[in-house]
Length: 393
Image 1 (cartoon, rainbow, N blue to C red):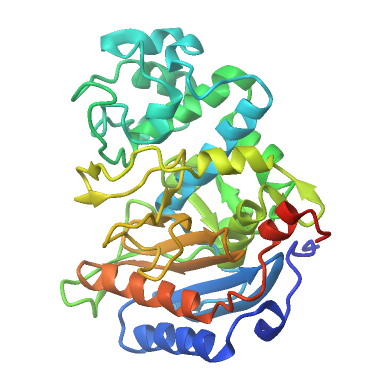
Image 2: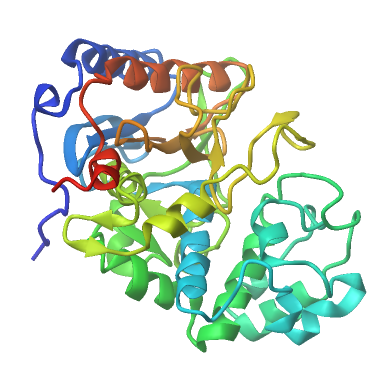
C-alpha cells in the first residue's frame, strides 16, 4: 500500500506564494507540451515543509502512449549527483570521512597514475582532473570491477588547477568511496540512510526495481527544431534503470525531488526527520569555486559540494536570473532542474522526458524558474529563518 507523502499540501496563498505566477508557470509548461517541445513533464513547488503545487502534463511514453501521472518516475539525470553527494555528507557527519581527506586514504589503489592527493572536496567540486574518464556499461553491476576501473583513471590536468564538469566520472569514484567506508552497496546505503528516512521510498530510486519500471517515462532526444522526439536506447532499458548510475541514474517524481530540496532548504530537516545538521547544509552549499569559469559550461558555476549556487554573476544555468544568490540546485542534461532557495524556504522541481537543445533549453529554464521566484512573497519568513531566530516551526 502506498505510504503517505511526507509533505502535506497547502494552498499557495497560505505559503506566501502568488497563485497567478504559479498558474502562469503551469500555462507555460502546458504550452511547451502542446507545441511538442517535449512529450510530457512534471513539476512541483514547495515552501516551508508544505507542497503548494504539483502538475503532470502530456505523455510519459509515446509508443505505446502512456499519459504522465502523479506517480510517473522521471529520469533525473545529473540531479542524481546531489543525492549521491548527500551520502558523503552523512559519512562526514558520522566521522567516517573528512572533506579534506585524500580519496586514496580510503581507497588505496586510487593513488595510481598520480591521483594520490585528490581530495573529496576536489572530487565533489569538479576539480579532480579526470572529467572524460569512463566506466563502461558492462561493468556497472560488478562493483569490484568498478573499483578497479576508477582506480586506473588517468589525469587530464593537475587536480585543483581547473574547474571542469565531470559529467559521469567523479560520482563513480564517490560510489566506490561510499562502499569502501561502509562495506555496503552505495545504492542500498542511499536508500536506507536518505530515501527511506525522508519517506520517499515509493517515489525516489537509485537502482530501479523491476516492479517500478512500468512507471517510468521514456527519455527522448529532440530534433534540431525541438518539435520531434526520438526514443533513446541508452537509458530506456532495464540494465540502465537497475544499475543506479551514480552520476545520472536516479528516477523520481517531481514532488519527491521538491521534498529532498525542502529538507535542504529546512537546514537538514523534513517534517520530524532530521537528516543533516544545519551546519553541514550551510557548509556544502557554500561557493567553493568562486567566479572561476567551468571549462565545460563556459561560465562560473559557483560549485558547492554537490549542488551549485546562483551567486551574483550575470549568467547562471537553470536556477533563474531572479534567484537569491544563495539558491542552489542541479540540472539533468537538457531535461530538468531542481533547486532550493534557503532565503525563502522554496524548493522547485521541473522534470521532462526529452533532452532539449540550447539556446531554447537554457532560455526555458530561466523562464520557468523565474515564474517561481516571482511568486514568492518575501514577507513570509522561511523555515530556516524561523529556526535561526529561535522561534518554533
